[in-house]
Image (cartoon, rainbow, N blue to C red):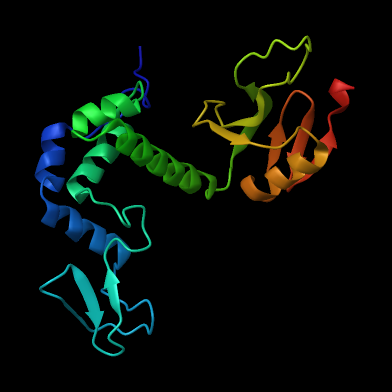
Length: 227
């Protein structure tokens, strides 16, 4: 029986992670490489020559004397925690197959529960924004979903009070196998809201199949089979 490629995908062991990102210098070097892949560029004047201050971890432009920090403008900005703690949090959250609660994260990192909760929210938001920036392609299956707790107000049916509306999408390959799943919160299940969502998330000239509609380039076409 063939193994599931998603379930048995190759990961990064803790020992390998410590070898790659176990020191503050290694984390700063990697962050510098991703932020300025072609060398330092002054965010004010665009000059490429700089020098690093010895008293503080700042980079000063040789042209305009503007001082810039490595973590300025990133999720690490204004943090009092070392980058090694942040990188370890990223590793624990992304490598965990059954999820990582903020309480367990605080125990692993040795920080407070409030700090780990803020850290987890920041990392999840960045992951969500990065995922939403990639347009959905190939064959896309779409359906509506409601998420939230029960509210006993006597109202029953689809989309009860107390639950948030979501659009659930699953892109599949040509063999019909699911690639990943994306959940997007919307304000309602109206046609205008679905069109707005489709124009943002769906690649142009792609058809989306669902129980009640097909969406192409942000336009909804009624499915005759569901009438």
